[in-house]
Length: 567
Image 1 (cartoon, helix red, strand yellow):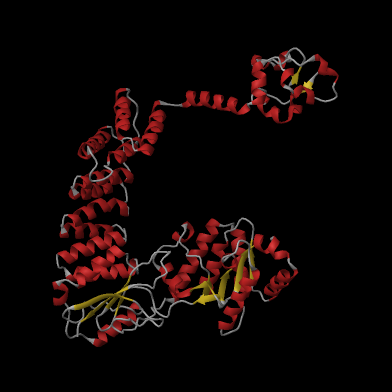
Image 2 (cartoon, rainbow, N blue to C red):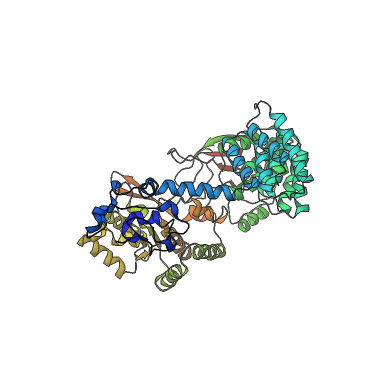
């Protein structure tokens, strides 16, 4: 009597490892000769008492197998696959790959000593080195901190390995130069670190911001002002934009060397780049305004028309005409009232305009990103729908607001927000609610009252359900930007998706357009955008206001540095 292996159900997958065809038959005493070639280990004998059975279920009992190996295969196919995988790896593992795997483990464990042993062993065995091997070794040569025992020896070994790489004619990449630059900086040798960045051009490599860090911070720490400025200029020439930590270091060294023009430039670059400063940078700013040099610089008489023109051309909030006034600065940390009036000097902050053309360009770039990340036909269909039914006065992130303090979507809660935004709108039009189709068809949406609510939104063209597989973030953000309207959401928009949008225009747009929702005793309270811009501001009278970043969980009022001349 013959039984097909396919009838073994879940155990057939194990047999399929050995069988070249699913038409294999198992016989009471042996495999078919023509089909057993190469598979002698799969000899199976089935109890003859089972031959009268109508099915093969009885053959699944352990006692019916006289071959232990076959029983093991059927009962634990995972172990078999693991053994085969190990044999396959053993056949394909080259000395180079083996070296790489072991190095990766050393990198993971921070094991410099073992990595060095593997390096010497690989050299002795004439293993061919690749750039990846060298980069891991160079990374491990960096001391963990200034107190790392044997740190100098590790640094010297790293530079020796880099020289060996050159002798082996292994082409370095950006990571190689950056790793060696860090070694040089750790040796308090920023000149070498900067020379390494300059050498990158000879290899056709474009430096990154991280490539310049070792040299720039090294020069600033050693008080080498001119050299630090040279690094900054090299960065600008290569289109590398400094961020807060780099600008703060340059601001500090410029202040220490009393270069008031450079200090003025750095504060304005901070305004354009980060808008709000960290607590560390805030201290550097305050140190400058309290310095003796800061009291001495500035024009006592300035051209008012020129200053006003500068403010107008800059969009408000700064003029760029240099330090105004003379004398000591009154430097305090303070706050703003609801209208943007400084509680220290009484000056009113302004709302900085956003160029409409910038908004259009941002909407185009946003659409391009969305089309790359989403199913093109889905997002293109949404764009067409928006052109037909938009623009809107406001867009509501339904999922984010419907889940405020709730586990399931709360449609009445969303509706309250919709009605509040409708009342605030000059046109009295409903805002656009963006919800994923799963939410619209979910359990919470099946209640008759909710169905009626959803139908009302649909009739008013105030609901768009994003399709399966889509990220609704792209939809509500694009709708708000393209409509040049308010966006109601508590999403801080800080994850990877939003990092793609850059840190120039997007923070400014968000500040002027995002409406947040707060739970209160009376229900949900709308927190409208502030009537002033939360960014470093330079007034027409020469005073400065610098906002300090607050932590996410810090509910205390925003702190500002107010620096104004004592009159």
